Image (cartoon, rainbow, N blue to C red):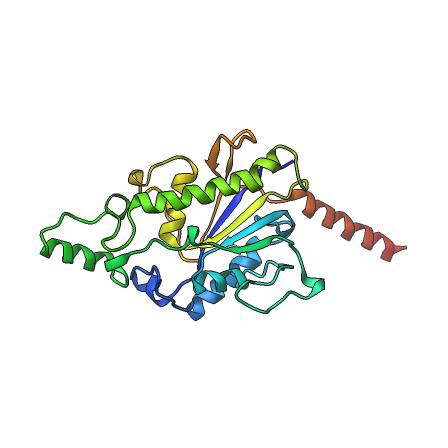
Length: 258
């Protein structure tokens, strides 16, 4: 049994992520380049011999924001479940995962409040003019938006759900064998905060991790123990799948030679 993982994927590039404007509740489409890069991520990292193995996914959590939902679609996981926001369904021959898909507010982006649509340099200039100290979202949160405590509460709730409903049973040998991975598709600040809370760091310990638009991160556990959460800095690919494919190719060559 492999140790279950959480794959965190930040949505693809938007005009605001490109120019550094804080994007919480504002709905923006992915740029053309953003869509291309997510498709490339899907081709490179999704598959039986890749980092994200669709058949091993137990559940998919996605933000309510359209940019995150579009990102999930473009990854081309081959979901048997319909997307909650769309009537699109995968053709039977293309289905690769039966993981359920859930939209949750617990993984929506940090509510930036008065700082929505403003860049960090602009915020710092504004605060200086108001006689306020330099801004640190991990310490200060956002005026008229969310505090670090607000964000911590909802992320801890999601993490507890993942461990109770998916990873705990998988590590205990319950449910389907080797089907305990979880995918989370969301946003930059909230996924960085999610990673910090995953390993028990307070948000005031941040910023610790970076995640580019369209980037992928992996969280798991040490010693197959749900009480020992860890960041997976590098994971191996499914060598057995590659070896099996090579053996099949050799057998085909042998048949052709007879």
